[in-house]
Figure 1 (cartoon, helix red, strand yellow):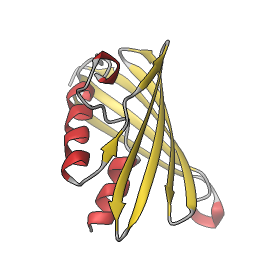
Figure 2 (spheres, one colour):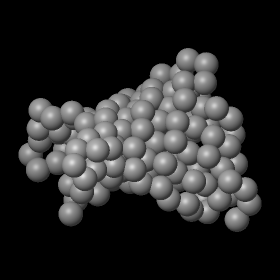
Figure 3 (spheres, one colour):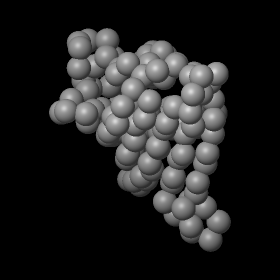
Figure 4 (cartoon, one colour):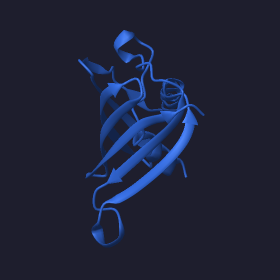
Length: 139
């Protein structure tokens, strides 16, 4: 259960620590958000798995909460590297005697849209996925 939770969190949008301005999450607008998650080769017959969800949320607060949850699970996150509208962050989490690493590259389109490319490595296996998020409107 703990491993599944950590993998889900690591595959989420970037978690930011509170060590400096570059690590603070961007200011996204609260509202109804739609997330399209694509995991290559994980669907039926080896096709890409596509997961779509809609949720009323405050993305900025959600990123802070995820960072706190990772820290409580013993995860270590490096400082985010920021270049223009691109933020890159990494995390390492202990899971079943091993380590799960995750690199997330967030491309910020606006305060209402972003894309995250996620690479996760565990037990010598690497997986990639893409999350495209956009604000649909008010809740």
